[in-house]
Image (cartoon, rainbow, N blue to C red):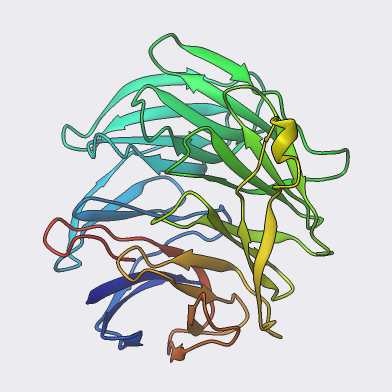
Length: 323
């Protein structure tokens, strides 16, 4: 098995972490990046490339040798979110704090389309994995759908309760209508984008939800990570169940992992290592690898560069999939 982790530290650096065997890692590259850390996900990856957002541009690197390929997506206002199209690696969407969303062609280094959001601050962006013309975003603390083909913005039928700011949004890649939404007050919701139904997961968290990640190998499981260091794996079978004969089937916690006293900022499944995930904290430079079958971490990786801000999955054609 071969895996890589791209890590954005709270300093202006990226670290590349490859691993062999059951979760053994060592650092091989340190990239002076200038990546910003005030947006939800400053790192994204697609096919043989990964990219990070600086204040006004996007830096694109090659996965294999970690060499800078180009600087693109130049903006006149601060970048607040960006996302890579999973079906077309040449397209990235960039949101800025002047309420614009700009679609860039990376290969041609040109803007394909600019869309003005109606006084909505966009904090998260995500392409629909099955439709290259659909973007979903968190804008003005509401869940929205953007149809690039029709230039239409639709506010989806979900808003968190008053006083709850959305901190994370994740989509189930095996059940495309299912989204998970976390808030700064520890609430987690499952939302069906097709029919507008939503379901509240009964969490006891009092602190912000910092990450949500669906199992890349199954539609049934999801990791929930809290700023206070709590991690749980949920089975989401039975969500939105309208069959009266199956009302007893509801989402439930499968495993609660050992709490991390230093807190958490990211929690990601490793796509090419089934049942394995990685956590990071923005209070120290330590990564931990976990198995879903064990409540305690398997390994610890110490980063010399200090605190970690985010993790991003890397996907390369030769190595299959990696994180």
